[in-house]
Image (tube, rainbow, N blue to C red):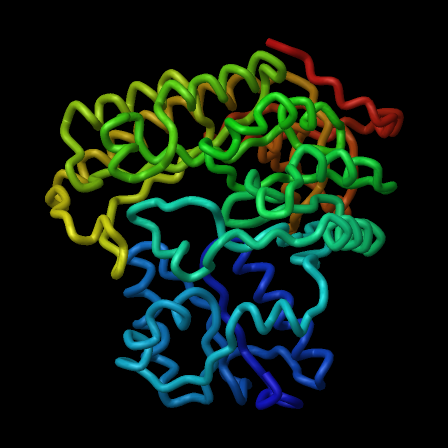
Length: 417
């Protein structure tokens, strides 16, 4: 990073929320040492924060790095840790290791935008998934200290963050290496003064099972969005066993049912991999059945691709045409669930929090269940109010702002359907 001192730099970031936080931290560091962030044409140096979670992403990264091969180029993220040879096949960049960014920055939290902050609660995980290259890149679980996280959230709240995202490769695993637990952390964060809400990141079902009752209780606090990202990957026990995920399909249903018993409107999202080695038509039908039973809202569907050095890479996987068919079928089923969930909100009044401005004349808001509500108007980031949902657009809803300022009373009770 010292090589970059005083230079004009351009940066591109790919991958997960954790990576996004590293990117913003790197920007903070460089600006502190006299650097200026500029567009590509004006840059003296180019920085790429890489992702390699699937083969298609890896190919995209290598194409992009090749385009910058004649520039003063710096790479960070997962790829230089696990695929430096592949990088060197297309360019010879300088490397900035992610751990070095976190050491230099000195905080586990950073502002991603005016109203959104990110706190990296832990790196690595306790899992041994047979297909995952991220585990090789990020290593074993290393939890940030409770005090570090509390200090970061408090600082972000003071800076004006209204949505604070807790991120890690498995957020539910926080504290397993230090004798603590995520619900205990959340109770401490809820005591911090300020108008903000916490959005919890991805949580492995196997880890959630060990803290389920206490975690459900932690979601009762109004400072926690009623949103759960529960990556399931498959509905077939046979496939889950080959993936080495550490749970069964019935465990997933138990988690979903327990949360929805307490919070009927809760928005639960998931991830699925189709075409894993050995996946049969019957295995895939079980995945469709699980999706329908769990009613996941927002689903990331990935076609399996072999990642170098992982156990699953040694086994043959289904043909690409089979993966495409299954992917399309799963997305179509998920879309029907999105439509049903979003349609339930039409005509209803809900609290909103403005978190993003994407285009002039409208803002993106979140309700207490983290539903994406687009409201027309130039409201300031962090504005809280109420809106009536008027349209279902599948992946988001449109809301009409209610003008009455008394709705800033703090009451965010949801009308149940």
